[in-house]
Length: 389
Ligand SMILES: COc1cccc(CC(=N)NC(=O)c2cccnc2OC2CCNCC2)c1
Image 1 (spheres, rainbow, N blue to C red):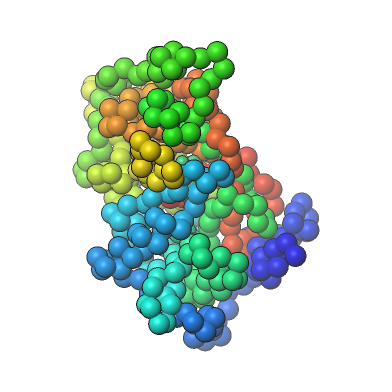
Image 2: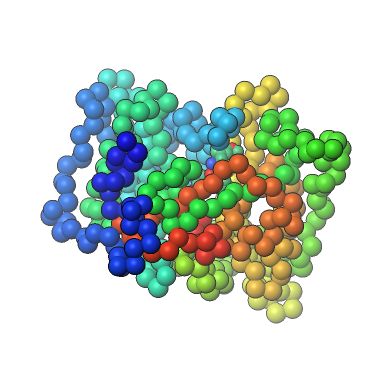
């Protein structure tokens, strides 16, 4: 039976899509905290809950190893996301985070970590309403424990712990269709190291294309073109916050970033997140901004390479420099830093540069979801201003 679990949850149900009588906003009202289940949900007998302190080196290593061996793979099972420990600590420790929302499942006897799910707090605007939500991510069940129906109980447990902090909505993405996407985005890839991408099977040599012709096709200049293009620094936080808040206000769903959020999510961290801005040489005004995060993938079963170094487009703002030129400068920077590929979703205004900068469409889609919040019309990707890690 399809979606046995999701039909029991306060999410847009397929049968309700397009029913104008259902108002936008929360699907269920908050329950009084005294009525929220105080004790954890029951796990199958052999397993126990553990709250994961990601500041503990050992715990962070256990989580890293579980994800490295059991997290999301591409449709052809050739690659698996390989989030670094530094990335995980960054992703899970934003301002106001709750350690109790970093949930693991252990085998009681061996103490082996076999499953994981997380939430972090985020203020997200849906149309004109700014809503305190949990961003749910890193749901992972060990390959050997699949189809034991662990995921539904993990989702219920993270929901229960989110409710205990008086938060009633959530946002999440998935490569699979569940009830009911608020938007469905296409991902695109821009080759930076085409020879390696073809060797590992990420890309294929185009018809009537030689390898040398392909290398030439994706070649990039050594230096960026935009005067005043530089790395973001701590003193830029106020200006970048203003720029980003203004830019994101045009989208129907977008984060409501304040300076603390911008400081955490967008100040550069080596091999985790990079951000650049354009400071006008004349006026010293900050006019544009680009950012990307670093998410390598393990290459499963290739003799010559074990890791794909990938950059993922994060938040970009263009007010003076054409977005095309801004993104081309970003490609130049990522090539210079030895990335193999630059990935982007067709969200925000990304569609305006994808084809022209030689991105190719990926073979899958990324669906966006809100929990306990109805939006009556499915958003076009260009109406979506939210990028999850
Ligand atoms: C190349 O290595 C891969 C390893 C695992 C999965 C995929 C395909 C895939 N599922 N890609 C995406 O979901 C994706 C493609 C472009 C941009 N962001 C993405 O996902 C982000 C956001 C959601 N959480 C994972 C990272 C590729």
